[in-house]
Length: 461
Ligand code: PMP
Image (cartoon, rainbow, N blue to C red; front, side, top):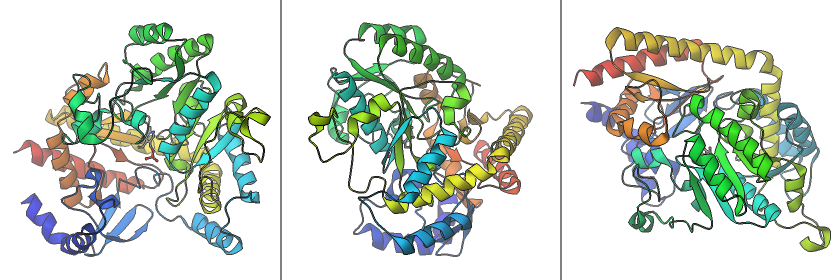
């Protein structure tokens, strides 16, 4: 019934996307995250609402992979600023006053960053941070925590849990709960890493610290998320990361905090400020962009970022060791959208974070009451206060990503996603749900009702 009903109400989307599919293999709508069976052809998006070609309206809990969660789609002041600036210059390859304004504003949000390098995506940012750390130390080995995702470059995709669990046909090396499976790399195009390049750390603090200590002379950096989309339990990761960051400081191994998901979302200063985690480099993506115009940044210590300053002189003449610059990195349009979007957040920041936290806490409370009342273990797992990664989970918490990933039932989650679609919510088909300032309290009330109704329906089958 569910499949037939969705097929019927999204007929126009299906026809339009089918025509697109013939030529456009890389389009967003065919990614597994977008319920490939029911891709949407969207004609308009404002605030938290999107409208498809069939005339259906949805409340968006996908929100551009979370990049638009803070203000929703096309916030007027940002659109206005970008429109004005576009009339002035579309330039790239030189600085504009907006770049200086953005850097000053970023200094207000993340004063722990002495300098920034602008790039286009979260993937670029983590790749650049790794490059800078390698240039700085002259070493090649990168340590990352299992389950952590850092984008789609080869090292970034190793040992990512949900990519495997939600989508059993796309297992990346090391992603299976029982460890790396060599033959999988040929299927995915991601080679199994050379052990000189990659050290995978467990979530267990004693073993992680031991491994870091053992490889201290080979390590270019330790790269981590504060709270990972594949292991969203801050109570486990935060104490571990504090210990790891201190040990890295003692051993002089650069520590890189990937804030692509958490930056500007957990609080003005991201997870670093919220949890008190100190790093040498921080990677920002998603929320740093405005209007969905791609922008990312690496921020942090000048000693590392200075390795990449561009200049007419040969790199070695001026003591710079490497390059992370790309054609569109930090282009004017993206900087304008970012500046206007962060300025809006800055204006609202006294109330934004407390209000959003209160809204999300309300959702958590209602789901807890639902669990108690029905015995159905539906959870919105805390991802700080702003992002949920939900599913049917028997336990409140899990010790490591393997047991968590093993506990998520991808089929139940997939059906829940489609049931939410039927009830007027657009979500990722990953076990993730984005919310934030984009949603009104009424949106979230309706979301809780839809999620709990869908859970009851699933439970009855
Ligand atoms: N780091 C983290 C923690 C992420 O969640 C993601 C993407 N979801 C990335 C890096 C990569 O960002 P992008 O998709 O912009 O390349």
